[in-house]
Image 1 (cartoon, rainbow, N blue to C red):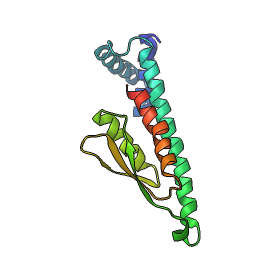
Image 2: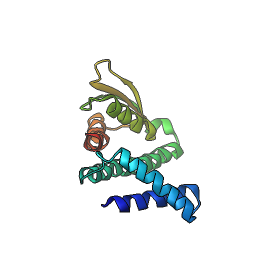
Image 3: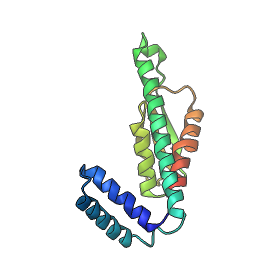
Length: 159
């Protein structure tokens, strides 16, 4: 994508954000976009940036999908009569493949923000994440779902 097209998109985004589509405001948005693009020019050249952006969007889409699915499951669980008979809370120790602080924090936050699960603690050596699930039939399946879902997408997007 050419820099002119990127600046045009940034100027249009500026106009949308400010809710002002005057020619002067579009020019100001283009100026801000151009300066910003100039400052990060060495990081936005080549197709690598677009692949990374696509991977970040893929991670966000996975999170939204899991958010809606788990919210539905928790809602169904809550409206059932005699909830105590149906709930199987469990605490699992998830072995981390992630190493960076930002990666581990993102994973822990995504787990916590997903209804029905909560990241409780990270071990001192940063190799294990303690996760509580409100309803879990299979511990290994939960660990596998986190590893193949959130953790794999985070590794793909941030590395």
